[in-house]
Length: 247
Ligand SMILES: O=C(CO)COP(=O)(O)O
Image (tube, rainbow, N blue to C red):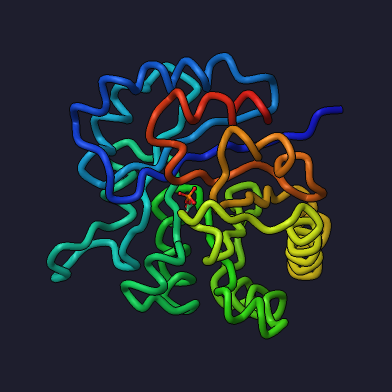
């Protein structure tokens, strides 16, 4: 039986309302995807409301790329999970390596954000991944294990997705070998099962980092890969469609 998969795009700090003219084509991809394949787009906060409105009544899920851990208050420039939900988001990405690096987010920060997101009714995609020097030092699995243990809250696992994104593969055109992806995804699966028991078996573990039409098929068929988190190739439907179709 074909496995259940999620193909999620992450627009990062890209996109204006003009780009939402193409959202119908993304929604069409979601509607035509094979049974068991879900399609989602995480967009900048400024686009969540319009994107959610435009994709209402389609199978495309719209989410945020981060949220604050508090519900409201004196946090200038921040957006809460409740606000994302209010704008129409159904999920949010948390702990992306760009935020861990640029905003100094710790595992504890990601954990607090995840609890806030779940409390607000958002599903969560928690990102983990090692840097190139950590991989070279042979510590990739222990780094990812620590990130998982510290970032993932106790929760209903049906609302949890993990994205393994090796930092050195993001936006670089470089990807780990299928064997390396399998080893890490098997490691993450074991950690989830040891934490959540049988429920940990069905958590989707996405691979992210330079996923594109040319490598999607190979990466999506690796052991314990439950989909992809796609950056650059999610910005246009022409690049994104072949990835959804490979799932
Ligand atoms: O960071 C990513 C998705 O969250 C991956 O980005 P790229 O697909 O552009 O490498």
